[in-house]
Amino acid sequence: MKIACLQFNPIQENTYVLWDETNECVVIDAGNSSPREDAALDNFIAEHGLSPVLAANTHGHFDHTLGVEHLKQRYGIPFALSSKDAFLLENAATSGSIFGVKVGAMPSVEHDLDGEQEIRFGKTTLRVLRTPGHTPGHVAFFDEGSKSLFTGDTLFRESIGRTDLPGGDYSWIMRSILDVLVPLGDEVHVYPGHGPESTIGHEVLYNPFIVEVLNEEVNYKG
Image 1 (cartoon, rainbow, N blue to C red):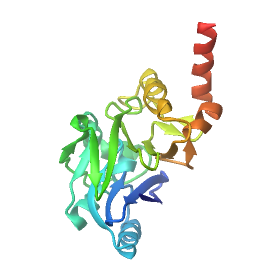
Image 2 (image 1 turned 180 degrees about the vertical axis):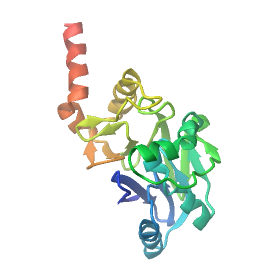
Image 3 (image 1 turned 30 degrees about the vertical axis):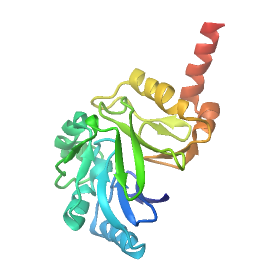
Image 4 (image 1 turned 120 degrees about the vertical axis):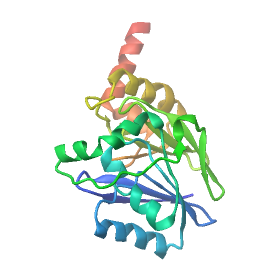
């Protein structure tokens, strides 16, 4: 599986294009927010001879969904998102205005990830992992073959996602990280929704939120 990261919109969101030898591709968290950014994504797809088959989102915040409608209209592909985050699409314009970002039409959802265990493109299967906390319906996507993990806004390099926005919950996000993501293994490569890449092993050692909880658990057991 091949992975490309394109950074879009004023929030500097990471949009990922994934493809394999079949040249079918999926776009994760399409954040393109202007004609210039739409063209950048379209040109990348064309230059690599890719055929988009799905727009899939880790969660429903506006900065991660700004480009989905363009993909649906341009390529005729469906949109996959947890129904638990549908309210975020409805409130996208208001949320965007708080950050000074103009939000256009939000996409309709064809595939409810709340009931899906995996998504597929070409010969590749991504596991859908439930990781609520940043939002109620947040998910991560995991490719076992390449040990690639797309964490959205749950886990960043040496940080975690905000939990003070509507539907956020700190205890949920920490349980998602400790019970769902960390057990995947130290060698797993982390591709977050913002900022640089990382690994699970790096985060276990250097992410202050994870280190604090792990130390508390060790002290409690001791």
